[in-house]
Image (cartoon, rainbow, N blue to C red; front, side):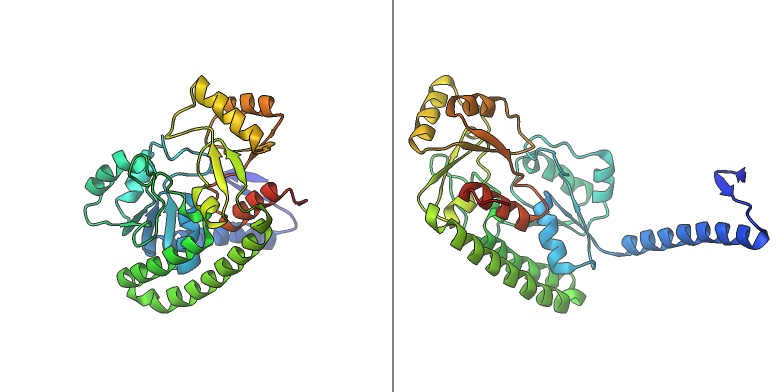
Length: 297
């Protein structure tokens, strides 16, 4: 074996084998360069969170390069985009916002970085739940309702076709496939959750409002408007949870579980982590349904 500038040459039975090994390495490098060049040629679309990425990719296939600003495990309330993401954003054609907290301070900066970038709002045209106490939308997690995802996908397919006319046929075809899957998921969840209609479930962060609304459930949350409960609120929450017969607390990876652990001890409840920001919407909704119904995996 001989090493030169990071390349290793293995001598086996003769020069033909040497040429074969080196040739395979060059072929691998060549294919990587081709793949990178192909990706560079695709329109770049940024979204805020991973569920949005899944929806755009389901519609556009591999015709668009889609990147999520907030990666797995990060909290959209406190997220700080990296310099690399800002640099990438300067080449983006579209940004699709979700209504998550970090956008409030960062979207103006994104626009100044790339003034020609078109900004869409995934909530546009949808029937949103309101926080009646504060007169505003309180939960941006619309992807926890399959039928709301379907309505968004219909609107988004039209918007993408307007900006990328060559993809119109692909977008329409893929929308029909996605809509069919979402209808089937909704029917499945509706059937499985029907016996629980009117029941309550307890979560740390109120990220499942649209899911609860769709299937006739009541979401009780430890956190309210991004704040931990005070002692009086916590005592009341424990009382309500006991009255509702709750023995499971849904947590998520982006938030501390310290207060949830206190509640769990008081209620003799178990903590179950489910990520409402998972890229796999279908799996996360089925997982929550399984936990709520007590079904065996």
